[in-house]
Length: 68
Image (cartoon, rainbow, N blue to C red; front, side, top):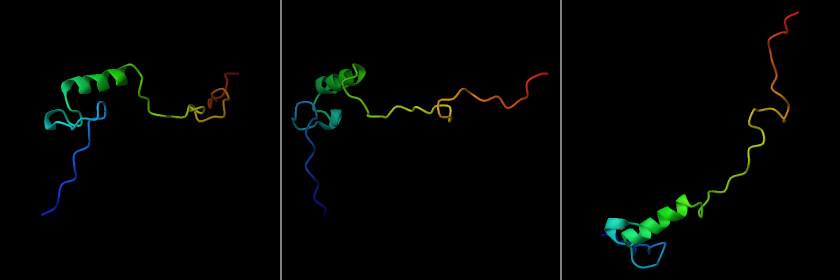
């Protein structure tokens, strides 16, 4: 029979996690984590996309000819 790894502690207060609130130990720690996400405390790193239009910063190109 495989042995189970010990449960990871609550990421907020480091107490043992409760099954009902996993990975947190309580509703309070779960709510603290949610507030941190909503307040922008946590952020996923990203680099700015300078080439949104696929060009090198140039104005968009029109493929249709100008009326003459």
